[in-house]
Amino acid sequence: ILNVEQSPQSLHVQEGDSTNFTCSFPSSNFYALHWYRWETAKSPEALFVMTLNGDEKKKGRISATLNTKEGYSYLYIKGSQPEDSATYLCAFIWNAGNMLTFGGGTRLMVKP
Amino acid sequence: DTGVSQDPRHKITKRGQNVTFRCDPISEHNRLYWYRQTLGQGPEFLTYFQNEAQLEKSRLLSDRFSAERPKGSFSTLEIQRTEQGDSAMYLCASIRQGAGREFFGPGTRLTVL
Image (cartoon, rainbow over all chains, first blue to last red; front, side, top):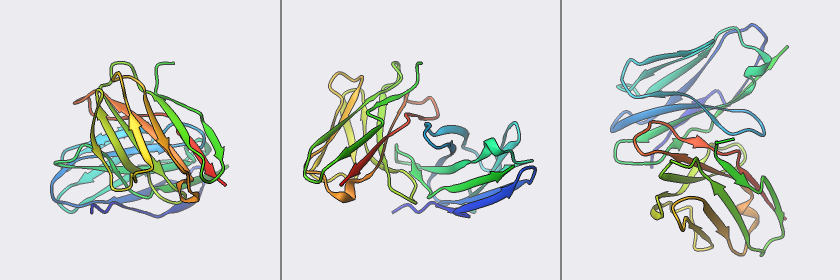
């Protein structure tokens, strides 16, 4: 059974704060790690697809890093805005598998 | 809109009834996935199709669940004799094999009373 863990489960921050979340996953047979943002009543939206150890990806104020040897990825949001409020999901793809194995998500709420 | 669509968005049913959900993937995507998300959890894989062939089913998919993708385009997920434990968000996703990331629909929220 593949175990993908995310922490924290939820986070309340003030507008302008910077924040980060953690995703941990099995370090063996790694294929890819995906980050998704899921706003209420909308479709989960892919943020990053990460495949190589040491990968760093950036999209606006959001960035992510990947360490496949130790089995973790960090997602950073710089200067949080109320529109960043969403659930952030990471999903792991195992070498031989074809489906995403998701973590439980981190629910972010940004107060104006 | 050329994204993944799901219908209905919400379904309330009584225990013991059958329900069917539909997913329309992005047209050139040959793979289609179904996931289920229950409160406080991340989505869990149920099954996936490559074209019209159902290639893998999770142990979560009991005999009451059946999925089809008859022409390799849209897919349906049917739940027979629904139970309260079936209450969840059912997500569909599609991808062109080798393209890198899955595109998700908005989900169908099922409530079984």
